[in-house]
Length: 249
Image 1 (cartoon, rainbow, N blue to C red):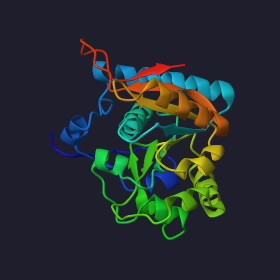
Image 2 (cartoon, rainbow, N blue to C red):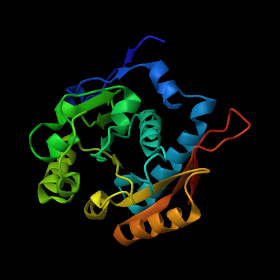
Image 3 (cartoon, helix red, strand yellow):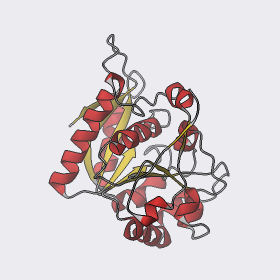
């Protein structure tokens, strides 16, 4: 499948000005992104998206974090799948930001490698438009670069990062902001920033994440923000119409 470009017909100038995401369908399928095209394979994430939007609407939540107990649970893949699923709601504008500054999760999944990254934006060394890639009229990804980030914990917990995020939200006026956040048990990167999101989804891996790890992660998140629910990722189902994600609420 040849690379495609995320096309746009948005009437929001700030969104229109963002560089379009270059879509490589083969890469997305290889990385288990099933929501780029609507169909049976996208159904589990579409259901998760709908539940997420319902809870966000009912509770007045906009900033939603995606966390996991440890690395390797697939939260970046979940974030990208949710992003493409959200894109089908043309009246909802969504920012999907990679704040796991130690890793290049969404960068690798999407195959987009900006020379500057989210950390540069949060340190006021770059503009959001330098690291953003837009898909369609209503979804924009904020990606990490391939460069190693010094002091990611301090960046995320800084007042400057909070101010920059507010400025981005003021300029782009998103309805939903999804954050791909660091694993909760691997470092202290999350502990300051989780207080700045409205809620969090905890992504766990089937047959890998233990019940004790789930319990510890959920308690840590609950101390800092609202727990929207658990997402059981990497499930194995006999039917191809059933996916790899189950939202537990």
